[in-house]
Image (cartoon, rainbow, N blue to C red):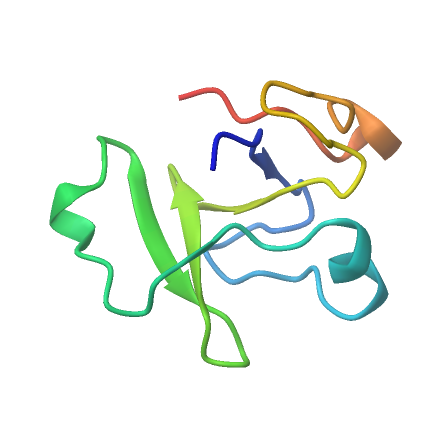
Amino acid sequence: QGMSPYPFDPDTTTEATCYDACEGHWPPALVPAKADAAVLPKGFATTTRRDGSVQLTLNGDPLYLFAGDSAVGDINGDGLGGVWHLARP
């Protein structure tokens, strides 16, 4: 969809930790459950969230979108709280 993805520093493994209130501001970057990981660009993969949805990862870090980004190319979440940073392949 062209929105900017962000990793969350507290995610120290491929397991996502942003849920509940966090998820309201930082929705996970979800992909279809049947996404073919073989067609993802280098460094990208997927992880399964505790609700069974499939989240995109970059170099093992789960990726999220920022609710404060409203247009393609917005990077309003970059640096927020010192734990959100624009994903850079």
